[in-house]
Image (cartoon, rainbow, N blue to C red):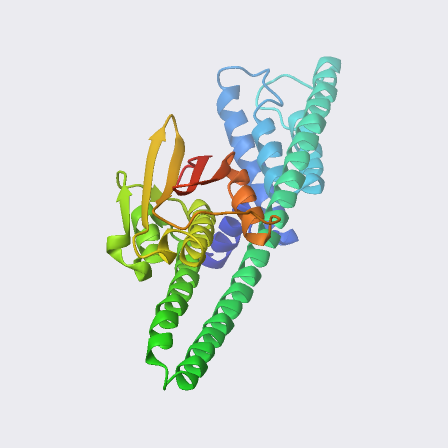
Length: 320
């Protein structure tokens, strides 16, 4: 009995298809209960012949499918005609009601079966998406593992090669660590999200905390937006280290952000950096800056001023 109950629960939730025995047994139970309800109603209204069987047809179809539903409808009609709980005998009016009952049952069975097919399709799509997401996670984890190994190998090789050049190693070491920290952060926020200050400090910290200032309230970024902003901040910070404020002894960076009407506004403002004389063709980094926020109805605008790089980012804050 316990196994039957567990099987029934699984089938009712749609996790499994019922066996023929279970479907037939449930249909018979529905007919018995409907007949008992009809007997009770007959004490008040003897002319109620088919109405109590509608729920039996509906539930039998919902569990066992349209074949079980059709069989239950036929059996219900026969019971409504054959069983008499009063002195009345079957007459043409009852047979007319029987035809109406079967027509209505046919419509109900079609509707339930159509709903069952839609649910089955949605369940199959959901199952496939879950499997693909699990596969994607395995692949991403493997790629992240390999990336960490390669970063560690590069770090070790450079350290070995520059043992006699500590000044060069000191300039390179913290940048390699910054790249690794960003990779770890992107991997981490892909599942959880993070605060915008933590994101900026992780990216800008290796350049020295006295070289930048963060101005804005604490703001938690959902995972997908955090990943996009991490990529943008990394690109801007790398450019600042190569050509901008962080490449000059007196260079300074001010990053500020506000939230207005559900939209995030970020301003990246570099000062005291080298003057940009000429701008080449847009490379991968520039294309990344322009496109990273489009999924969030956002945009990025960058200007090369005499005082330094000025970049504004705007996007919609998705719900967490």
